[in-house]
Length: 368
Ligand code: OSB
Ligand code: MG
Image (cartoon, rainbow, N blue to C red; front, side, top):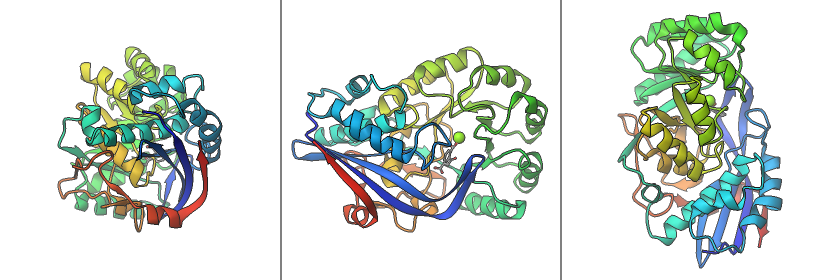
């Protein structure tokens, strides 16, 4: 297939409730959508980047520029035999994986539509439904957080993840554990600690957490390898893992026992699948992380999560937790047992609501 044309679009979508992590608070998303065209068919991708360069070095504006000026010219007009070639076509670009991943994912959707198959099937998915957890942001007080946890436990989510930061950690988790002694629970620090906090992190062992996600620096493997043997709780790396090579290095030195896979962070389905395969062979659990995606990104996450080895509940949850109305139909819905059934339709398997997207659009650009 030859990509004849690419449409970039930025939409604004207010979150139902603000979401706060150790690096900041989001109230409204700025989301870049990518639509690629070939032979009368189209494929969709969603850039999973944050508004600001606080989770990683990328931002909505950097991604717009990198896609328009670098990724698009490297992809447009080339005879592409498989979406797996896309990372090589854009390989001269260092980093900027969320920008590259948005286009790569759109081409996977297009390829699945060309073949008349669901994307999960084209990727090699085997699971009929995916296991879901939720990620709960920081709140000013424990009462507010307990209310949120209660709601999500009642909705059936299999695992509750709580954001932590210095000053909102041990006592808060203790209060939640007291109310929910049996619930599968994890915490995510988004790099808010250093090795100097090892004693505090060790104390979290008391709460039998499934994992502690990314306690130390966003670009670190070595310090995590020093921390992991001091903890009973498994470390899960998110920010630090950008490729299968990173996964191999982190596991080899014992920096973590679990890996969070995010499509954008690792530049798309091709690399995500390599990480999944590497970990699956070694019985290392992986799970799908989230970046407050709208429906297109969410649908790509669901397709990836059907792969074998995505056994732990991910952060992919129902559209209605984020948006009054999603950009896909039907919206993503979760069963009372905390699962999302893989969709039957071709490509990402949900219908893209172009009218809704049009009404949310802030800027567009067509690249030929
Ligand atoms: O670290 O997993 C993270 C959101 C934005 C940036 C980083 C993270 C998150 C989440 C939310 O935890 C997951 C979601 O609900 O999409
Ligand atoms: Mg995380």
